[in-house]
Length: 349
Ligand code: KG4
Ligand code: ZN
Image (tube, rainbow, N blue to C red; front, side):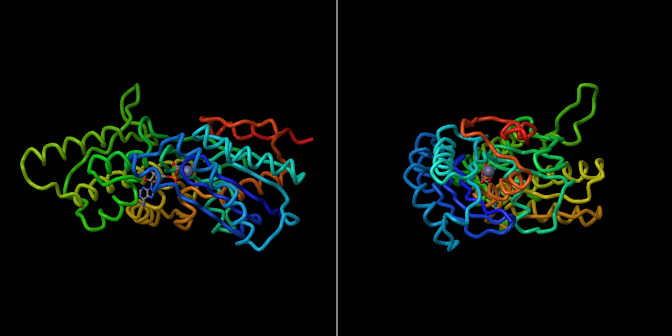
């Protein structure tokens, strides 16, 4: 069994967890959302400063909640890519320093690999191969999970990520930041069939449409036009109906692509991860379609859908069990494809 202290500071949560393989001993998530709300989105420089102020307290709280001491920690991990550079640097530097001081192995973890591993925290028997639908504020991808560190991207968004679309539509409906949870709540009181919105398709050069790639920027513009028209007509904008129609369109688009991908590649399990995996409309839609096609859909508990460090620790424990560690010279990267994960680890002797 491997016990890992993990740190996640890629965006706007300062998160620290202690994980024993797939078992979460403690998970601390200090959200900066109230700080960024006044600006209507994440301000990178503010995020870095907040991480700096919070990180040491969060580490102490993780030990306290787990009732463990340094003697029980086998390795220290931190998210090193992708994300906001200044924010990532805080967590990575803390992890490398602690690894040096306590003379423990260090592992850098890819944020999206962490989101894939979030499903492992509640599914003790899940093993590759399976299909991962990653839907967060920065990414929308369909990933063929072949083994620890071995991934193939089968589909992605051509423009806005799903979470980004939720945030932008929430902004134009004047619902504040972050948009996903507010739209989700409002949509439950609205009619998803109230407005027909374009799903957004990606054309193929030879004709037809891409089966797995999605596009959400046209949908966002369609919502903007709809709202402008409704305002011009002088009536009150039925915000709940707009939210429900938008959410349903996103849910159907993602569901259709994930199901097609799983069936085409003969994968019987779809694991969903990232902040948008918390969306009730997407969960319902995907679950219903999966039952129809005899597929299994796994959702992490809500607290492990959005950013957390437990998922980072779980990924690191799996890498460490295979002898993978990272050099202390490892830096952060704002962008790094999931297919490049093994670059973070030293060759096995
Ligand atoms: O994975 P995450 O916490 O951070 C990133 O790695 O991006 O995802 C954050 C995104 C935000 O865009 C937020 O609006 C969205 O996830 N989100 C949701 C819900 N909860 C969070 N989107 C739709 N429905 C939700 N319930
Ligand atoms: Zn994330």
